[in-house]
Image 1 (cartoon, rainbow, N blue to C red):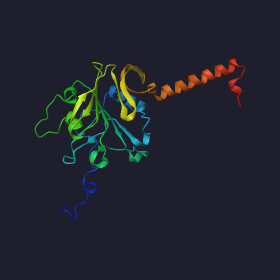
Image 2 (spheres, rainbow, N blue to C red):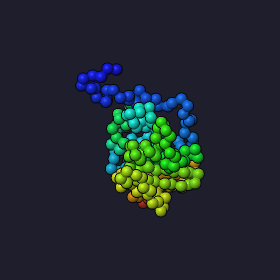
Image 3 (cartoon, rainbow, N blue to C red):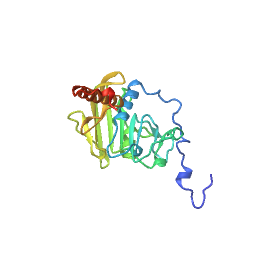
Image 4 (cartoon, one colour):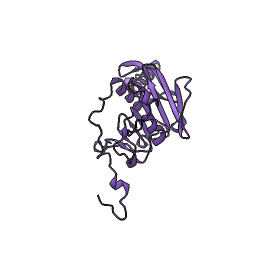
Length: 244
Protein backbone atom coordinates (compact mmCIF):
# COMPACT_ATOMS: atom_id res chain seq x y z
CA UNK A 1 0.00 0.00 0.00
CA UNK A 2 1.37 3.40 -0.99
CA UNK A 3 1.78 6.17 1.57
CA UNK A 4 -0.76 8.93 1.03
CA UNK A 5 -0.11 12.60 1.59
CA UNK A 6 -1.31 13.47 4.13
CA UNK A 7 -1.16 10.02 5.79
CA UNK A 8 -4.48 8.30 6.39
CA UNK A 9 -5.62 8.21 10.04
CA UNK A 10 -4.99 5.01 12.04
CA UNK A 11 -8.74 4.34 12.20
CA UNK A 12 -8.62 3.72 8.44
CA UNK A 13 -5.40 1.73 8.26
CA UNK A 14 -5.29 -0.37 11.44
CA UNK A 15 -7.12 -3.72 11.53
CA UNK A 16 -10.43 -3.79 13.39
CA UNK A 17 -12.12 -6.59 15.32
CA UNK A 18 -13.55 -7.78 12.01
CA UNK A 19 -10.07 -8.21 10.56
CA UNK A 20 -8.49 -9.97 13.54
CA UNK A 21 -9.20 -13.62 14.43
CA UNK A 22 -11.37 -14.33 17.43
CA UNK A 23 -9.64 -17.70 17.78
CA UNK A 24 -6.42 -19.10 16.36
CA UNK A 25 -5.73 -22.63 15.19
CA UNK A 26 -3.73 -24.46 17.82
CA UNK A 27 -5.18 -22.51 20.72
CA UNK A 28 -6.22 -24.37 23.85
CA UNK A 29 -9.81 -25.52 24.10
CA UNK A 30 -12.81 -23.63 25.34
CA UNK A 31 -13.09 -22.71 29.04
CA UNK A 32 -13.99 -25.47 31.46
CA UNK A 33 -17.23 -25.53 33.46
CA UNK A 34 -15.80 -23.63 36.41
CA UNK A 35 -14.56 -20.79 34.21
CA UNK A 36 -17.98 -20.45 32.58
CA UNK A 37 -19.97 -20.52 35.84
CA UNK A 38 -17.58 -18.18 37.65
CA UNK A 39 -17.64 -15.68 34.79
CA UNK A 40 -21.46 -15.75 34.79
CA UNK A 41 -21.58 -14.98 38.52
CA UNK A 42 -19.13 -12.08 38.18
CA UNK A 43 -21.16 -10.61 35.33
CA UNK A 44 -24.55 -11.12 36.98
CA UNK A 45 -23.56 -9.46 40.26
CA UNK A 46 -21.45 -6.62 38.84
CA UNK A 47 -23.76 -3.62 39.22
CA UNK A 48 -21.78 -0.44 40.01
CA UNK A 49 -24.20 2.17 41.37
CA UNK A 50 -22.27 5.00 39.72
CA UNK A 51 -22.26 3.48 36.23
CA UNK A 52 -25.24 2.55 34.10
CA UNK A 53 -25.26 -0.72 32.19
CA UNK A 54 -24.73 1.31 29.01
CA UNK A 55 -21.42 2.66 30.38
CA UNK A 56 -19.72 -0.60 31.23
CA UNK A 57 -18.47 -3.59 29.24
CA UNK A 58 -18.12 -6.96 30.96
CA UNK A 59 -16.28 -9.56 28.91
CA UNK A 60 -15.30 -13.18 29.37
CA UNK A 61 -12.74 -14.95 27.17
CA UNK A 62 -12.93 -12.16 24.62
CA UNK A 63 -9.62 -11.67 22.82
CA UNK A 64 -7.89 -8.47 23.92
CA UNK A 65 -5.60 -7.01 21.23
CA UNK A 66 -3.24 -4.59 22.91
CA UNK A 67 -0.31 -3.59 20.66
CA UNK A 68 -0.80 -1.62 17.42
CA UNK A 69 2.80 -2.45 16.47
CA UNK A 70 2.06 -6.17 16.65
CA UNK A 71 -1.55 -6.42 15.61
CA UNK A 72 -1.86 -10.20 15.99
CA UNK A 73 -0.65 -10.23 19.61
CA UNK A 74 -3.45 -10.66 22.10
CA UNK A 75 -4.36 -11.97 25.53
CA UNK A 76 -7.62 -13.66 26.49
CA UNK A 77 -8.50 -12.70 30.08
CA UNK A 78 -10.91 -15.00 31.84
CA UNK A 79 -13.01 -11.95 32.76
CA UNK A 80 -12.55 -8.19 32.51
CA UNK A 81 -14.36 -4.91 32.98
CA UNK A 82 -14.08 -1.77 30.87
CA UNK A 83 -15.59 1.48 32.13
CA UNK A 84 -16.96 4.13 29.83
CA UNK A 85 -17.50 1.78 26.89
CA UNK A 86 -20.92 1.05 25.49
CA UNK A 87 -21.94 -2.57 25.09
CA UNK A 88 -23.84 -3.79 22.05
CA UNK A 89 -27.63 -3.56 22.10
CA UNK A 90 -28.12 -5.39 18.81
CA UNK A 91 -26.89 -8.89 18.09
CA UNK A 92 -25.13 -7.89 14.88
CA UNK A 93 -23.05 -5.36 16.86
CA UNK A 94 -21.64 -7.83 19.38
CA UNK A 95 -17.85 -7.65 19.55
CA UNK A 96 -15.70 -10.36 18.02
CA UNK A 97 -12.70 -9.06 19.98
CA UNK A 98 -11.69 -6.06 22.06
CA UNK A 99 -9.15 -4.01 20.11
CA UNK A 100 -7.39 -1.33 22.14
CA UNK A 101 -6.50 0.95 19.24
CA UNK A 102 -10.10 0.78 18.04
CA UNK A 103 -11.82 1.20 21.42
CA UNK A 104 -9.35 3.65 22.98
CA UNK A 105 -10.18 2.56 26.56
CA UNK A 106 -8.06 0.24 28.72
CA UNK A 107 -9.80 -2.35 30.96
CA UNK A 108 -10.34 -1.18 34.53
CA UNK A 109 -10.02 -4.65 36.04
CA UNK A 110 -8.85 -8.05 34.81
CA UNK A 111 -9.59 -11.37 36.52
CA UNK A 112 -7.61 -14.51 35.82
CA UNK A 113 -8.76 -17.87 37.16
CA UNK A 114 -5.68 -19.96 37.81
CA UNK A 115 -5.14 -23.30 36.17
CA UNK A 116 -2.12 -25.46 37.01
CA UNK A 117 -0.62 -24.75 33.59
CA UNK A 118 -1.09 -20.97 33.70
CA UNK A 119 -0.20 -20.10 37.29
CA UNK A 120 3.36 -18.90 36.73
CA UNK A 121 2.47 -16.62 33.84
CA UNK A 122 -0.67 -15.27 35.55
CA UNK A 123 1.39 -14.30 38.60
CA UNK A 124 4.28 -12.77 36.67
CA UNK A 125 6.72 -15.56 37.51
CA UNK A 126 7.73 -16.34 33.94
CA UNK A 127 10.15 -14.35 31.84
CA UNK A 128 9.39 -13.22 28.34
CA UNK A 129 10.95 -15.38 25.67
CA UNK A 130 13.06 -13.76 22.98
CA UNK A 131 11.04 -12.74 19.92
CA UNK A 132 7.83 -13.83 21.66
CA UNK A 133 4.85 -11.78 22.87
CA UNK A 134 5.02 -10.41 26.44
CA UNK A 135 3.47 -12.35 29.31
CA UNK A 136 0.03 -11.56 30.71
CA UNK A 137 1.57 -9.80 33.69
CA UNK A 138 3.70 -7.58 31.44
CA UNK A 139 0.72 -6.70 29.27
CA UNK A 140 -1.58 -5.84 32.16
CA UNK A 141 1.02 -4.04 34.28
CA UNK A 142 3.41 -2.35 31.85
CA UNK A 143 1.69 -2.06 28.47
CA UNK A 144 -1.99 -1.52 29.21
CA UNK A 145 -1.51 -0.40 32.81
CA UNK A 146 -4.75 -2.00 33.98
CA UNK A 147 -5.58 -0.41 37.38
CA UNK A 148 -6.66 -3.66 39.08
CA UNK A 149 -5.58 -7.25 38.49
CA UNK A 150 -7.21 -10.15 40.37
CA UNK A 151 -6.08 -13.78 40.42
CA UNK A 152 -8.17 -16.55 41.99
CA UNK A 153 -6.88 -20.08 42.55
CA UNK A 154 -9.86 -22.34 43.27
CA UNK A 155 -7.61 -25.31 43.96
CA UNK A 156 -6.07 -23.53 46.95
CA UNK A 157 -9.04 -21.20 47.65
CA UNK A 158 -6.55 -18.37 47.34
CA UNK A 159 -7.52 -14.89 46.17
CA UNK A 160 -4.85 -12.36 45.26
CA UNK A 161 -5.42 -8.79 44.12
CA UNK A 162 -3.05 -6.14 42.81
CA UNK A 163 -3.40 -2.39 42.36
CA UNK A 164 -1.27 -0.38 39.96
CA UNK A 165 0.96 1.96 41.95
CA UNK A 166 3.07 4.10 39.67
CA UNK A 167 4.57 1.69 37.17
CA UNK A 168 4.24 -1.55 39.15
CA UNK A 169 1.55 -3.71 40.71
CA UNK A 170 1.43 -3.82 44.49
CA UNK A 171 -0.43 -6.52 46.40
CA UNK A 172 -3.65 -5.52 48.15
CA UNK A 173 -4.09 -6.80 51.69
CA UNK A 174 -7.11 -9.13 51.88
CA UNK A 175 -7.78 -9.83 55.59
CA UNK A 176 -11.30 -11.17 54.85
CA UNK A 177 -10.60 -12.43 51.33
CA UNK A 178 -12.28 -9.34 49.90
CA UNK A 179 -11.43 -5.76 48.95
CA UNK A 180 -13.27 -2.54 48.10
CA UNK A 181 -12.93 -0.59 44.83
CA UNK A 182 -13.89 2.98 45.60
CA UNK A 183 -13.98 4.00 41.92
CA UNK A 184 -17.01 1.82 41.23
CA UNK A 185 -18.44 1.70 44.78
CA UNK A 186 -18.29 -2.08 44.82
CA UNK A 187 -16.22 -4.76 46.51
CA UNK A 188 -15.00 -8.12 45.27
CA UNK A 189 -14.51 -11.13 47.49
CA UNK A 190 -14.92 -14.86 48.04
CA UNK A 191 -18.43 -16.11 48.79
CA UNK A 192 -19.37 -19.60 49.91
CA UNK A 193 -22.63 -20.72 48.35
CA UNK A 194 -24.52 -22.37 45.51
CA UNK A 195 -24.76 -20.85 42.05
CA UNK A 196 -26.14 -22.61 38.98
CA UNK A 197 -26.70 -25.72 41.11
CA UNK A 198 -23.00 -25.84 42.03
CA UNK A 199 -21.76 -25.31 45.60
CA UNK A 200 -18.33 -23.88 46.26
CA UNK A 201 -16.25 -20.81 46.97
CA UNK A 202 -16.89 -18.19 44.31
CA UNK A 203 -15.68 -14.72 43.39
CA UNK A 204 -18.60 -12.36 43.80
CA UNK A 205 -19.39 -8.64 43.95
CA UNK A 206 -20.82 -6.90 47.01
CA UNK A 207 -21.91 -3.40 47.94
CA UNK A 208 -22.45 -1.55 51.22
CA UNK A 209 -25.51 -3.72 51.96
CA UNK A 210 -23.87 -7.08 51.31
CA UNK A 211 -23.54 -9.56 48.46
CA UNK A 212 -25.32 -8.33 45.34
CA UNK A 213 -28.18 -10.77 44.63
CA UNK A 214 -28.40 -12.78 41.44
CA UNK A 215 -31.56 -12.62 39.33
CA UNK A 216 -32.76 -15.88 40.90
CA UNK A 217 -32.12 -14.54 44.39
CA UNK A 218 -33.92 -11.29 43.55
CA UNK A 219 -36.98 -13.25 42.37
CA UNK A 220 -36.95 -15.31 45.58
CA UNK A 221 -36.72 -12.16 47.70
CA UNK A 222 -39.67 -10.64 45.84
CA UNK A 223 -41.74 -13.78 46.44
CA UNK A 224 -40.86 -13.74 50.13
CA UNK A 225 -41.88 -10.07 50.42
CA UNK A 226 -45.16 -10.81 48.65
CA UNK A 227 -45.82 -13.78 50.95
CA UNK A 228 -45.15 -11.67 54.06
CA UNK A 229 -47.48 -8.95 52.81
CA UNK A 230 -50.20 -11.49 52.06
CA UNK A 231 -49.80 -13.00 55.53
CA UNK A 232 -50.09 -9.57 57.14
CA UNK A 233 -53.23 -8.72 55.16
CA UNK A 234 -54.86 -11.99 56.21
CA UNK A 235 -54.03 -11.20 59.85
CA UNK A 236 -56.00 -7.98 59.37
CA UNK A 237 -58.98 -9.80 57.96
CA UNK A 238 -58.23 -8.85 54.36
CA UNK A 239 -58.15 -11.43 51.58
CA UNK A 240 -55.12 -10.52 49.40
CA UNK A 241 -56.54 -12.54 46.52
CA UNK A 242 -59.64 -10.33 46.30
CA UNK A 243 -57.95 -6.94 46.32
CA UNK A 244 -59.15 -4.72 43.50
